[in-house]
Image (cartoon, rainbow, N blue to C red; front, side, top):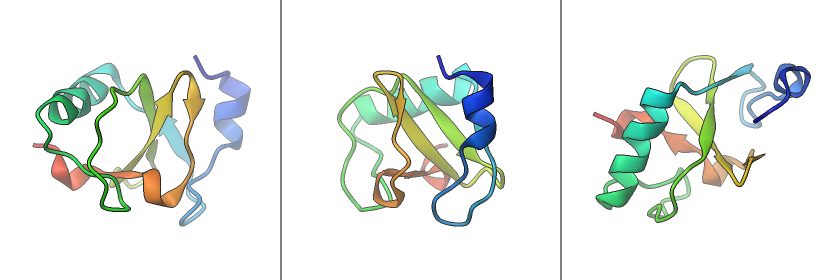
Length: 85
């Protein structure tokens, strides 16, 4: 779990907008799409590993994955959320 104080520090590395924790429903949708082989990261690579959670950009367009309780704040690793139905 990410500490609330740390969450206030994290910003999107692409546009510097605030990030918020993804809700469980969104993470579950992404994990189902990963299991079905239907989702790619911003770098174009298909995702194969389940996410523990995510940080969503303020505009709701992008999610940065949390893997093993570590946020991955790399632009190419971000997940464009327009792929999620």
